[in-house]
Length: 419
Image (cartoon, rainbow, N blue to C red; front, side, top):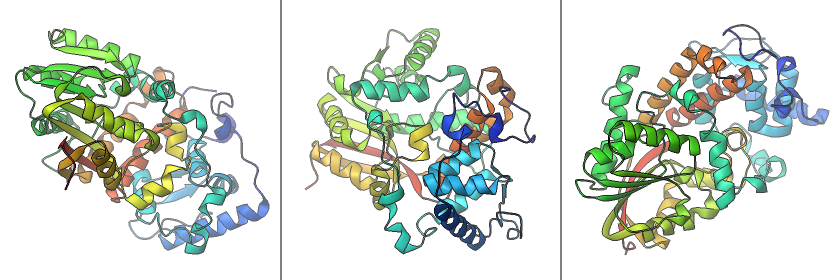
């Protein structure tokens, strides 16, 4: 199949590489009755939300985003078998499109808890897929899961991130923000975290989750001695090159190392949007590692995506589209879960501030840049299904923050449990 295609041309399941994308190229087996129920429920939900009549027999509400179903039978069949996984795979297969993808997903996210009638929601365990045992974040599994996302290609991430190569929420001063402001907004976020952790000249800093090294660089310029950990070999290589280029390799030590194998004690620990990749089973190990790495009187600054506690519990054992295609083994925690596990490890929450609106804006800018650089992405060898998957991922995430289903927090922890 062709690696990519110009935007706007038709795309269908028959063009999907079945070896690379088996569950997108093929349709799951579904009982006719199940598909009929899915058709009824989805049509009812879309009509209620004024998105669009699925088979084109109607119109969306004034100014509302719209969905266009190119293959309704396949769309309903996937949802009948695989729920939201099927919904995402149907988009990847080109079976539906939207004139405003994040808009459609924002409406759906805002009504996530009432799209399915209450009696049927109780049956969720009967149809939801369990998470694959192979995605568990054991020491070996975590490295494999991280590489599946972060080792795709440094050039891929460079195609949509700003020049700082920062892959986490920025902090803006104006809305909406222009792309040119994203680098300064990322520096603003990093500086807030470093200030929260009181990083200054002479600070011994541990960073868990290197990314491509921008926070380590910023901390080293303050005079800190930085040890930064990653499981991604591609990230480590580029981070080291950037640090050498800045003349700061004497101040920053980039290690390919699991957080469970931290050595030494530090005045400050910073971890940015890494807890989401840990997995609920290993949150006790994560917070214990943070606590044991902290020197007396030290401070821990976390940046974490969060969701409501009940939503987290519903998601914890469920295989989702995101866990299947984007972040295997991951789970977004709730604020309650963070406080509980931090407290059990002997840490107390000193500050906890949210700014979800800023992440929605960050994701919008990433998505717009990604779609503007399709030709570059295609040239890197990423096919149309991957590009639709990535666009769906960015829009899906943006919708989570715009609807307030998700939030992002900057949290300060220190020694001592709350009394």
